Length: 285
Image (tube, rainbow, N blue to C red; front, side, top):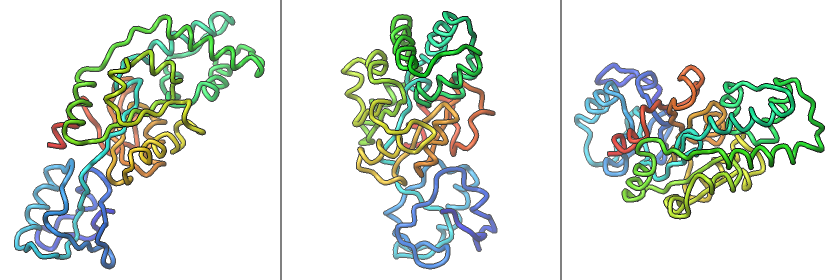
């Protein structure tokens, strides 16, 4: 919840200046005011304007509980990572697998369509691609078609990790940050991407096999967050796809996005835009 009024000292409107997460209102009093203890809060990802406003607003504030119209943030205790497009660079191979399967039927699909619908379950993506390709696949054959696609994907994929991806996760764990892997892909596809040792870096792993509804529904991130035993305000999702961003927001969790597979124009609605995963460590420090 952002501050509503201008700060009396600086004249700055925090509602317009804050560039990051929703404020934690652990000690709500009345209206938009917050009671706080200086040692209880940390500021995460503030922009330079916010830092100036925060600094000026703290002038004269004692260690006793005071009321102040400003955004306070709980420390982040959990990072929830998407897999394809965030940890591993494999989405092009998913497209190639769909392309091959539809080519066998005499149809063609576009890579942009596959990327824009990343996060949906295969049974949800399939009718979209059927319509685009113009081919006819009886519904009773969908399951076999999808399984053939997955098998072909695993036969062609070359696993490539994004720079600093696993190193970032390792360093987060050393900092005491819980990490979850949240993907719509089948469990076998996840196991193809990550070795057992790499999987052990994550406190929780959620795959398409574990969720009743895929992205953009809140289920994937909601289930992961609860599995970590954390509150919404204590978590941050890292995504690369529009439906993943929508899923995070539907779950009430703040979302950072990284433009690995799609330009930023497709990644609207995210709270933070990252240049690399390593940026998370810089901000947390």
